[in-house]
Length: 68
Image 1 (cartoon, rainbow, N blue to C red):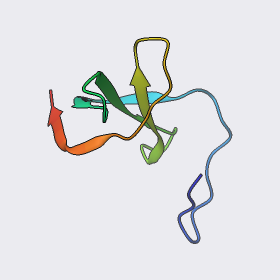
Image 2: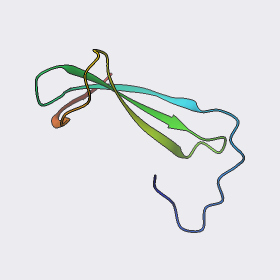
Image 3: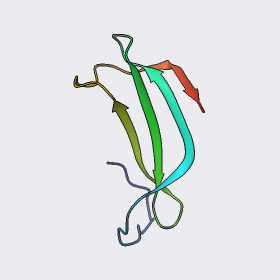
């Protein structure tokens, strides 16, 4: 979790996608999805990394990140 000094986050009413999605590789070569979600004020709420197989995320290779 991260905080922005002095920012009062609105009451949680769900998250909203920023409309940009990314893909990158995990350290074993499996593709990982990268999603950004905003709060009610349009501020970053969550950076979500999704590995679609049943294994844990190992070590995202950020140099392979491509935005879609």
